[in-house]
Length: 218
Figure 1 (tube, helix red, strand yellow):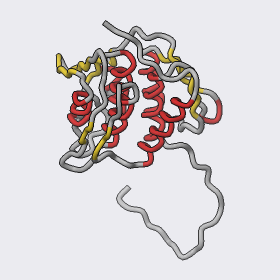
Figure 2 (cartoon, rainbow, N blue to C red):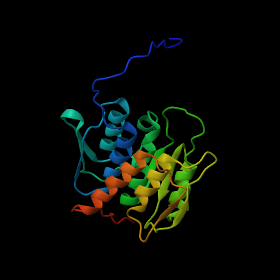
Figure 3 (cartoon, rainbow, N blue to C red):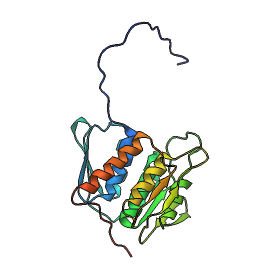
Figure 4 (cartoon, rainbow, N blue to C red):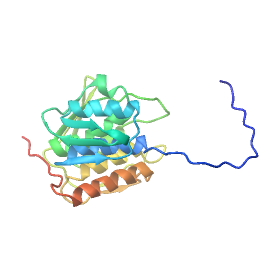
């Protein structure tokens, strides 16, 4: 299709059902790794990226159930796997969001370099700089990013890049900081609605019992 031809001049009317935001749902789904109980998300759109992340989370030990009307329940059942493999991560860039929760909750994460759409300059170095500021070590081996930390500590973190703030980076570092000792301040944080939605989810988890609790690791 070369163009759209629109004949206007008539007032629009009617109702249109609006589904939930995919970009808001994906980081929240990843953040479920941090939790002890069950999370239920409502109005999640049934899209390929949602299904792909659901499959990745199940490989990482999160039981995911897709119900009716866009409802998804997530519950951590097995904490043995911290490796997000390339065949899963390459399907979409948002898979990198599991890195922060894995690091915070399980003390380590091994995540392949993300795939997904190629839109402009979108490196993940800001994610990694944020993790290092919290006290994690970062290594690159065979196309996989390895991040480890016995204990994360709050810090002041600047997440500005050549083209401004990073949405996924802000969400990733914010999720990791939830289980760090002390207070973390993120400067030049992204303020898009999906970041706010992720923060609202994390606050809701902190108000509920059982609360988020980090596992001890060697």
